[in-house]
Image 1 (tube, rainbow, N blue to C red):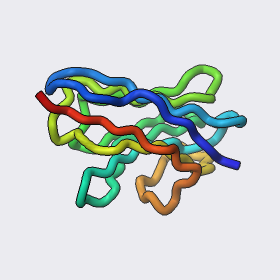
Image 2: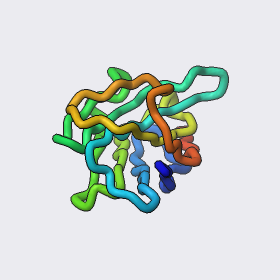
Image 3: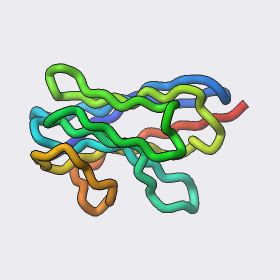
Image 4: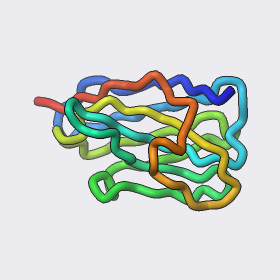
Amino acid sequence: QLQFVQSGGGLVQPGGSLRLSCAASGFILDYYCIAWFRQAPGKEREGVSSISSSDGTTYYADSVKGRFTISADNAKTTVYLQMNSLKPEDTAVYYCAAYIEPGPWCTMTPARYGGWGQGTQVTVSS
């Protein structure tokens, strides 16, 4: 059963950096799309970034492009989100999730994803 355990996050000042981890529980991420989403209070869940485990194709929302980097370890068991130059508007609960996809293109529609992680709070504030 698809399941992830998240770690990382916390409180950081504007301009700071954080790294989130998303570890697959008991399986290897072969031929999956794995994505990070975030949800701020009173707002809908937003797709932040995705990576295709088949060929490494990545996607970034315009709001994070150039600041966030998604990556996967060589064992294909953990996906990371490196977040640099953080802004107060990045404050949200961040979630990882995945779905089976042999191709390189990943949808960012939350309903397509499963195995949601428990969520990690990221707060950017001075």
